[in-house]
Length: 279
Image: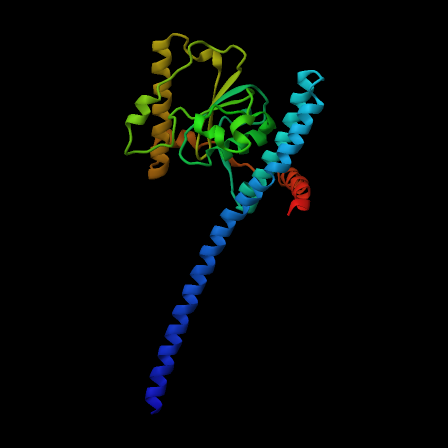
């Protein structure tokens, strides 16, 4: 009788341990989803209040010089984007390491920003770099027509920075023909642009002086393809762990780039306060 009770007790203990493991995994899964869902709800939840203040400023400044409206718009846009970065950098615990031409990250200039398009949140990396350069309020995008339907972002961007994902869509190794369809190049050189950054995640920054960019279409095409060939080689070596010359050069100069917690939290607090009466 005692042996039967012992066996029964052992089975109960085993089942209890299995149950606790299931509960633990379920809690971890729920916490993971909460970390993704809650920031998304909060970020989109402040859009109506943001839009209302923006419309008010638009009408208030309609009789003033356009640069006054633009200055106020840039400041308010900065507040929202730093509010977003508060979640993507501080809440998620993201650590950003920068490599390449780091001396230009802290230097303000007009740029055409070219990056790999590998996920739906690539734009966050753009904003992380722009925030460190002090230009987060000036980033603007060229986007697909369908993205005009997204609240706020679809109609809001004006021409200041221009962010281009040349592949046209997210990279898919099984759809290589998409690269061939995305060969659309500038017809003429834009003289007012003073720099061009080719950014490759992890994040590697390569600044290219516009004066060194070929003008002729044939030369420009060859130059651009060669640039992307070097970028792909660095990515392949990086992900495969090879200690190749290209990988060594790309990652030879790098450092941790800390986020601006104080200003990002201040912007979060400001928009959260505006949204509190509507909760």
